[in-house]
Each structure stands twice: as C-alpha cells, then as structure tokens.
Length: 213
Figure 1 (cartoon, rainbow, N blue to C red):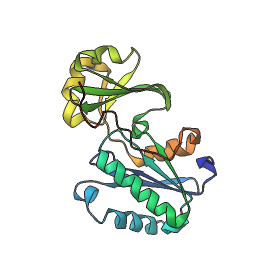
Figure 2: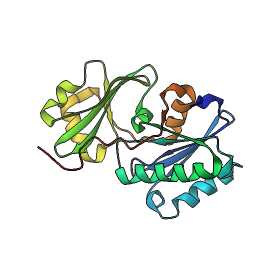
Figure 3: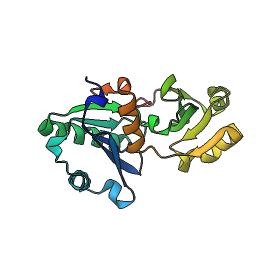
C-alpha cells in the first residue's frame, strides 16, 4: 500500500460509537464532520457522506484512499462502515485501509492507556506512547484493572457512559475521563504515520462469539 501522505484525497470514517464521524483530507487539509443523535444511525447516512464530499468539491469517484476506524466498539457500526468503504472503493478504485479507533484518543508525546468495556465482565486495554503501540489489545477482569496500566500512563475510555465510575475508582487522578474517537484525529494519524495503516481491515472484536468459560 502506498503511503497516505502521497494521496491527495482521503476519506476517513469512524462509526465505532454513537457519535459517528467522517473527515476529508484534501490537498493536505483536514475537513471534519460529526454525525450525532439521529444522524448517526439514519438509513440515509451514505447520502449524508455524499453530500459532505460534495460540499468540499469531491465526488465519490474522486477519492484516492478510504480509511476506516476498526474499533473496538459498535460491531454493527464498524461492519457497516467497512462495507460502505468497500462499496465506495469499487467505483473510485480507492485503496481501503484501517486504523484502530483507539488511535483517535492518543496524544502526541503522551503515554495513554485506552480502556473499554468488553462486556461479559471483561475489559479491554491497549497502551500507546504517542501513536505507537506499547502493548496491543488485551482483556482483563475487573479485579485486574489496577495492575493492567503501568505508572506514567494517562487513562481514557470511549465507554464513559458504562465504566466512568469504575475507572475513577481504579485509577483516581490518572483517569482523564471519557473521550470520543473522531475521524478527524484518525485522519491526522493516517497522514502523519502512514506506516500504521492496515490493509484489508476487519473489525477489532475482542470476545469470542459464544462464551466458553
């Protein structure tokens, strides 16, 4: 895959949460759009993306690359975003790549632990130093949360509506609160660190489809 910085027109999509978003990279500039509330899951979401592109003078066939947030998060939303990207790519011959949605919660020159609710009494954790992965996604139980994040890491979550109090209890002042992964930040990562792009992306799904324990 060619580096993203060589691409003139890139569409970035994230549908891993209820606050779904897109961003257009055009000639080095990033133009964001957030779809919240009813807009996020409306059946005419593809039309909204089309209209967003048109507002920036881009037709779907004019895209060079499409980057999709792979989650973790809403499995249905992520799969829908990937399917949309693949369909759009058929007409535009654009390359499709992926990035973990958690990269949208990273901070330059900061060690960040992103913690999420994996359900079934499990929590997922991934550790970053800037945008570079220190430890990839792993699962822990509630009683293991305290030891899952090394000293020196700030803790954030995209699942604040479910586990905000839990993380405050476990991490105290190290917990920086709930953040929403947005396509605009993923666009920054895609352009600045094209080596992180994943070809043939699939949803990041951390639990087996059937519980076995």
